Length: 475
Image (cartoon, rainbow, N blue to C red; front, top):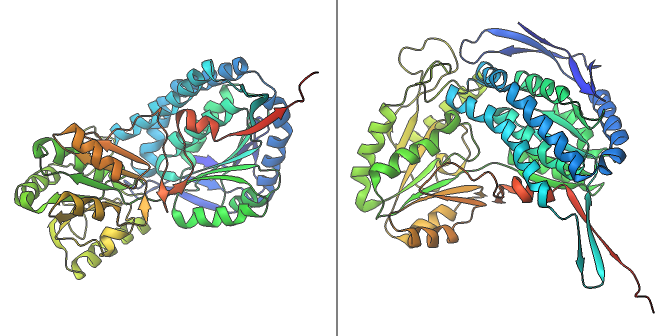
């Protein structure tokens, strides 16, 4: 049984001043596995003050010193990778293959940042001026529950590489992942106050981070609605804000695609992390001329998915994070049927043979129009919409007809054609004939999927400010 009552502030685990307690419940069994005491606004203020006290010293460190910190973080995350994996499975039911990928990625983030620093020029000459890339200052890192370890570590790696002290606010739905990751951060022995971690509600801890004058920068990953609130709150103090927000990604299967290869990849894109992913390819665009063959392949692929125990390496889809998310999925399935879509796999209710746990049936709709709710809204569960199109122009228009633009997928036998279509899609990242991202490349969205970029060089520079120094020439 887990009992988490502490925040991590100024290099130590300290009892939170907050009094609200919530249960930590296993989504696979619906059993209580622990209790969490939430931090409050006063805890957030203590964490911000600690980060403020550390910023001056951290900002003056050399790239070599930061590389050492990053390598230590990499080592401690690697050492804790099994614990990160297990916490991920226990806390939100992430299938073991996905959970292990996240655990490995947590360490990889620090390795990538350390490699970038080896050759990064923090000062360069432009005409008669010197341009300096300086730390943005104390930063708030706000992470979601569906990939807490990975999101914390990717943001933290960039912040440390840039020389920014941080306050991390993970979701209150992810205390187990947070605890394991925070213990690994502590073991790395960074300067006190460089990293602080508080778990609390958005209306007090989140609000304090968004409005406190000592916070210079906010990096948020989560829903578009919450991101808008954070951006508005930060405007009063002109905080630098980057937002990685909701998505409704389109997978465009062109008429020359090998369906035997494209459909399994499209299903993976749709149901990754049990569908609880902002990059999930939940709109599958299929040429009308190939629809019959495609639907048959989709049915076979979905029927072969194993839903159940997330510890089982053969499981494709685990439970959803909580009962509220299950109810949300059921409502969307009902609306899909009411609005005229054709149910070809799954549907309402529990998967067969599962009598407990927050499980849903992987569900696929055909004959979907782009104006239906299931095609417009981020569902955040294993629900796939299949939309027919008649030509390439229509496919591009349908893919772009969305308020979101985070990620997209293109499947084609013609590399040149696929690249041309990818160039026309309104998305921050497009993957061609693959579903795994390039972790060194910039990641982020357009339209209501976000502002700014993370990962690699873009992630590092997001935590830097540009300062120009131009002196008069000597006579």
